[in-house]
Image 1 (cartoon, one colour):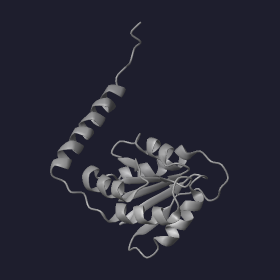
Image 2 (image 1 turned 45 degrees about the horizontal axis):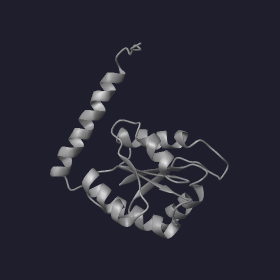
Image 3 (image 1 turned 90 degrees about the vertical axis):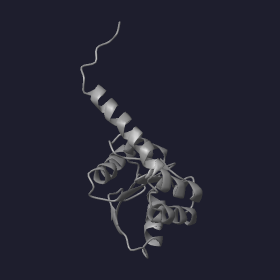
Length: 159
């Protein structure tokens, strides 16, 4: 499994601890930055990871910022991405099993390294169940495709 990882300054310390704690996994992690706690803009990092996952260069992504929220919002703008902010083990398992989420976002100001390690391990090891869940994801994809088509049309104001 190949996992793209990135953080902004708010998630930098957690990212470093998380990558060290996950070193025993048979997983290749590639860190796309940032490289310090100097303030940066989270969309710059979330977009790189989301694009890499969307094109299939990586199997999954992990994004870390202060809360995990901005990273997930940004990543979800990329078609095919199902990014979720997770801060508990149950949600980590459920989102993989039921939603086939492909990017995990967490907040360095919300959880500590122990919880982040547990959540990441569950996220990376839980398989998608398919079945009825695939039907629902197909509907999400249809919605995504519909609005992508709508955005390609010439939009004129109604007034």
